[in-house]
Image (cartoon, rainbow, N blue to C red; front, top):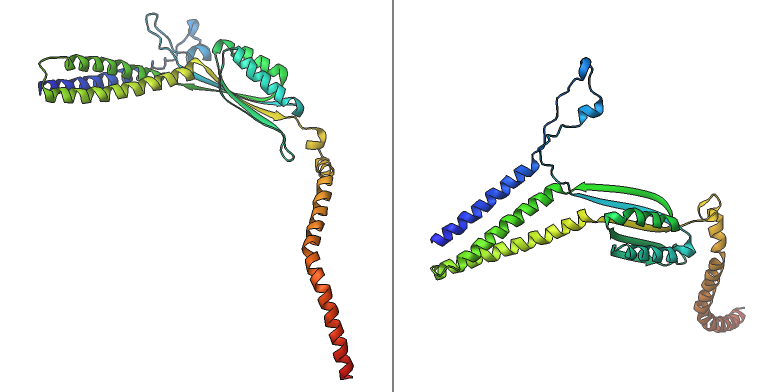
Length: 285
């Protein structure tokens, strides 16, 4: 029972340490009071807005997840080449290709492609400038998300769980432990290791988001004046005229194939009915 009590004590200490680490990570410096410069004049807005930092204060490292979303336009017949060039350019810069898809042109839809990658921060400008050389960038949106609190909290949990796991392993190797104590310690050790693995995996995910820059690119086909201008409906009608004629002819053929059997049976039947009607009409007269 002493071993079990010690396990619960360690779990309680871990929980307290995690709470203290979270509180320490979320403390922010208070806003500075409005100060006046020499001669009684107020400082500029920029100087007043910036908080003062003590010389001996430790700066908390920021973990920022950056992302770019671009929409590029290229000629329809050159989209495949430009898409392949972007993929090769990314691979040459040690990027991580998360997804890449290309939809070819059909009779009713223009070609479309998308590329989702992660780029090292040192190569992001080279990648974006190379992309702009082959295609027209129509839109470029930038996003950022502060992941500092998640990283600090996860690191604290990993540290505490690692310490707890090591202590449990030491308790498990104690020759004075009873069989019941060993079972309880092994159960606590398995739960601790499972949670530690989960936190480690989540920390790797955060590292990918903060150490790399996500870039999502949509490739669109450039439309001509007849495709997007005032005469676009007429251009589409002319381009579809051949298909409309063929479909109309196909409808006529379908109608004839349905009507011919009925005509072959119906015409003789009408002739017979007309013959008998003539005879009956003659007798009546």
